Amino acid sequence: MAMGKSMRETFRSLSAAEFFYRNREIAGFSNPSRALYQTVRELVENALDACDSHEILPSLYIGIKLVNPQKSFYKVTVSDNGIGIPPHYVPYAFGKVLFGSKYKLRQTRGMFGLGAKMAILYGQLTTGKPVEVETTPLGSRYRYYFKIMVDIKRNEPIILERKMRRLKKKSHGTAISVVVEGDWSRAKNKIYEYIKRTAIAIPYASITFVPPDSSEATVYKRVTNKMPPPPKEVKPHPHGIDIEMLKMLISVTEASTLKEFLAESFQGVGPITAEKFLRDIGFDPNMSPHSLTAKGIKALTSELKKYNGFKPPRADALSPLGEDLIIAGLKRVLNPEFVTAVTRKPSAYLGHPFIVEVGIAYGGKIPSTEEPQLYRFANKIPLLYDEKADVSWKIVSNAIDWKAYGAEFPAPLVIFVHICSTKVPYKGVGKESIADVPEIEKEIKNAIREAARKLRTYIFRKRKEEELKKKTIVYVKYIPEIASSLAVLSKPSNTEINGGGLTVKELEKMLLNLVREKLQKLGASINVESLRRSIKIR
Image 1 (cartoon, helix red, strand yellow):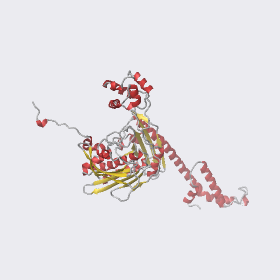
Image 2 (cartoon, one colour; image 1 turned 90 degrees about the horizontal axis):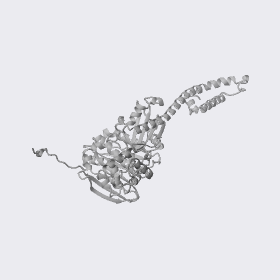
Image 3 (tube, one colour; image 1 turned 90 degrees about the vertical axis):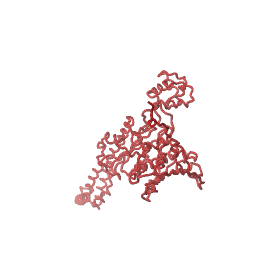
Image 4 (cartoon, one colour; image 1 turned 120 degrees about the vertical axis):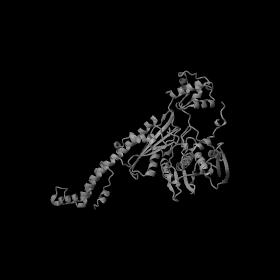
């Protein structure tokens, strides 16, 4: 029986832009509240990468303006002082999905070069407004302005307006403005929290944020000029390979032998190691890589992934913050009484290098809470959603006995956990929580315990000092009375005591000096004069 016309299926392809336009929740644009937050996040991360990668101390402006109250349209503007974008790349950088500068094996904030374009697509979908871009490339005397929309069917930019002007003095950087449908009242707390945590992670940046409901800006001033070293592009490690990646590497190699191909295409593999590996698995080191069959590529991939003779992945592609910057960031925003940080040595999972960093801030202006306050970061990006699904929460809430480290809840305690890697193992497409990878879990646990031991030393020393302070108050409180009694006893008629003749003030001074000497020997930082004033002793 012939199939009816109404039952026939129709087939067609989707462009990358149309796919992400139809599935925008993949990138976090699921509703107006989340979309407004996500737009700020994506534009800020692009701006920071434009500065960090060229070791420019970032100066960021973030502005949100309500442009249509009836329709809840908000204009989000983020400007930076980064390297700028060459004008011939601007239309594609903002109008073509899966086009960008992040498709290299090194640590970057964004993984796909997709986020900013998703904000642009979401804005185009909900408001019909184009993205506006102003940019001055490093070394240029011209400021370039573009209005761009995305041809969703063709995944190509549509340039609505383009102009340029000569600058009176040299400058560099980019400003991007996107109009999106948003919900500021619901997104407000997340956006403020995101900017606060970004300020913690990058104390070397100056950040100004102007919200839509206030003319008063929130400003985080730069507190250090020290920056983490920028990551370097590296070759893949054999343990992180898959069949398709191996095929792509073979398709572009100019190596004439398999031994040369492995040594040139992978890190941790030299000519001697390559030859030994190939002979061990029964491959001819001198065969051409282009002569490998599909079966041979599959076998080679499998052996590369499990061979233990390769050097571990290098950490050159990573850019950890470092202990000094973590401490500076926590101090800058939280004003704690105690802060410490730990940066672990590089490790690897499935051939991907990673570094775990932990900071602990305690007391001061941190409010007490019933549970530890966890600040999670991946490649310097604050993670605000899905906290309870994250491996760090599992460790902080279940694997660490905080009471053993002196922290009894409610307590003013913040734990900062940063994971940097060329491939962060996110649990879902939203990139908001880290998966329970055993190697990463172990490193986080060890880093937290190392930092917590320093916290325990501080808390126990503080408690000991508080006990000593109570005792000192008693001593100081009764010094005038003791001095008066000794003055009577030390009169000339009682020459056996001090030889006689000491005044009350002299005796008080002598006794106070004895107390100070004792405190000094005990290593206590108690100010005796302050204590005397606090208990109103003259």
